[in-house]
Amino acid sequence: MDDTITTLLRGVAKGNISIADARTALENASLTEEQMEKAIDHGVFNPAEPGSIISATLAPSGASYLTLFFFVWGLFWSCYWSFSLIYGLFNGWDQQQLSFHLAMTLTTTTLMGMIYLKYVLPDTIIVKYGMNKFVPEHTKDWKEYNW
Image (cartoon, rainbow, N blue to C red; front, side):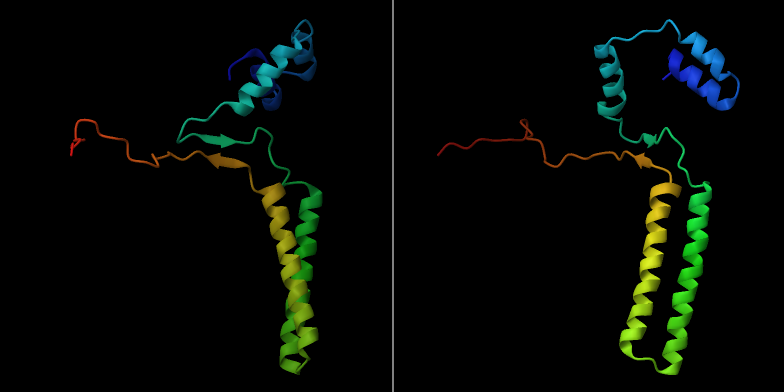
């Protein structure tokens, strides 16, 4: 992970290296199609060591204005539908109206959860240690009886 391109990308992300300097450093770099496929497959298809933590390379966009707007919108409508449901319970509304308000509350909450999982929660995987699914044969303890 300490190759030239990764070092340049980290430097640009931290602000130590300007984008123009990174472009000039990579001007004469050339890759064949086979080398590029090998580099892409290296990061994707190599099995991870057990116990390692794998994170997404790109930061999730949980701080975007659209995501914040959606959560404010979702909180407003969740409160609206749930409080109208409570109001309807105390005033004797029929079951169809109450079930509609409950469904709208749950739908809005579900949409907020889906947006949270997709855009706010970081993509992190912890590779667990695997155990053998079978007991290997113990040759020193195995006795064969002839009849």
